Image 1: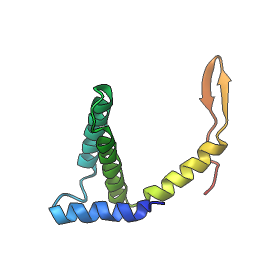
Image 2: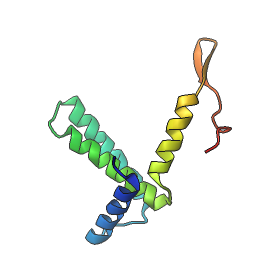
Image 3: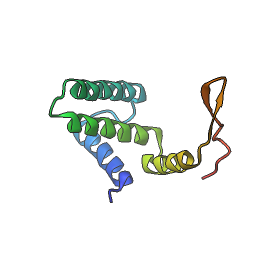
Image 4: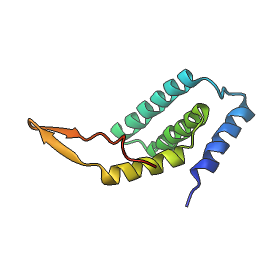
Length: 105
């Protein structure tokens, strides 16, 4: 089992080692967007590096989570629990999800 908190620390350590920003949230969102675009392009064109591109997406997401001061691992686990219990209903033929904010940690 991988430890996302540990990987999140490694991502920040690597940024510091290379002199990259560890505070530019806006820039990190832009890089993340670019990596998602590269992954989509790799999938679309059936390139061999799709796995690496998806890894880049995860790395930037982990770095951004560190910048913003939270554990992505904990957030993923909370969201998985919410999704297990999420209830959907249809109104006028459109799917509407119930508000999940009342589900506690």
